[in-house]
Image 1 (cartoon, rainbow over the protein chains, first blue to last red):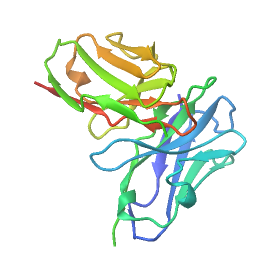
Image 2: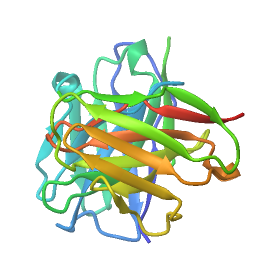
Image 3: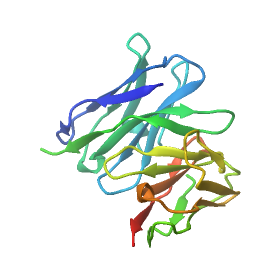
Image 4: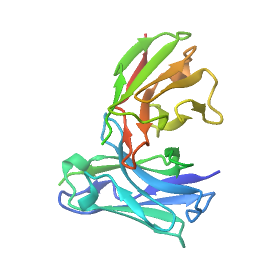
Length: 122
Length: 107
């Protein structure tokens, strides 16, 4: 059974860059059967899709974050990472990674990691 | 982007009640819709995909319906563990979007 675990700093200063890693166990991120996504949730608010990395390494990002965002994969470590530059208080959120199930045109997230809270503050 | 609007934003119900949550898309999304349950302090959990297909292991009291722009999630008999927040998510476009959520509280 695949499991995902996010890791990274809990506190980031304004204007700095956030780097988070999602470690995947119980399955290979190299499989063409699934993709890998990131979603975030500001405290007390709804969910926002951040971006998805597809097999082969191609990516698609939320247009609102595209200029600041990089998602990458390290197949040797079975990890997916996110890098978000120029952090502001508006980026404070719980960040989740999730497996993307995508038969045909469908895309849904299952399972999810437990999430990691990132606070942007000086 | 396709906007997803859920209603109501919150509701109060009792154990055993039948509850229906709706999700409306700003344009047709065929059946490219999923539903998630999020308990407090936990990650979301997939309940339904392709508008009406129940994820393995999800109790049969959950059901989904709809196509085009209007969708619904129904809990036929609310159980104590169902008090949570529910989100819909569309995948008609590559830019995925979620609804704002519906919080189901105990009456």
